[in-house]
Image 1 (cartoon, helix red, strand yellow):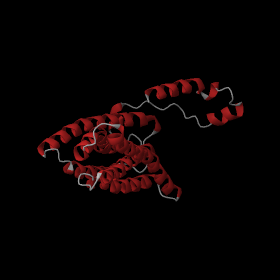
Image 2: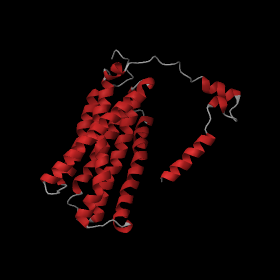
Image 3: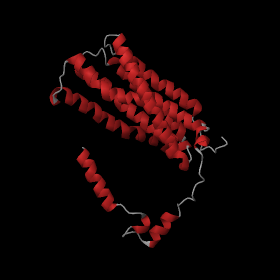
Image 4: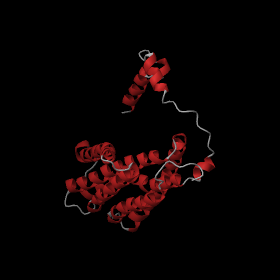
Length: 250
């Protein structure tokens, strides 16, 4: 996979041009593109961005939910091995994990499709994102049944639905931030949110270890906690996320 990424980078470097330097872009096309060029934004101090409620709406919600993906990434193999003695071969452990992560890929795309469909039918963008996130939070509840599933493939189905819905949720929370954040502040807001998510991941690791130690490796508590995290984050986003692009004074 790493080598494929390197090939992609090489191809991108060979084929990417700025519009002004592109060999096939005509003057008329360049003039049309430059119509959309915005004036250079005013530099905003980081403290100003921290005063925006939208920054904290995203940062805390993302800090609550993003660590769940890392839980799946690191703890699903031990869980499946403990429950079903799968071992580490491709046919035993590999196929269930492949199916789970393929579902995550579909969720990443499907989450955006749903909210775009709602927007196309006249719903306001922020409302469409929040409604989509509610639907995916409900779907994530399927993971509650994973620990006591009647068989491997029932557990894989429950987890796949939750992982796919997590990715769909993430697609919408990212889009929601872009809906209400001024363009020239967006990278800083995303970076701050990513830092908060990493801190949340540090706590998640400690919580998972403590719960499994206290319950003798019983995953029921963890799989019950996970859906609640999304509903907490959704309530926080609903009340804190701006409904329009704010100014620093807001």
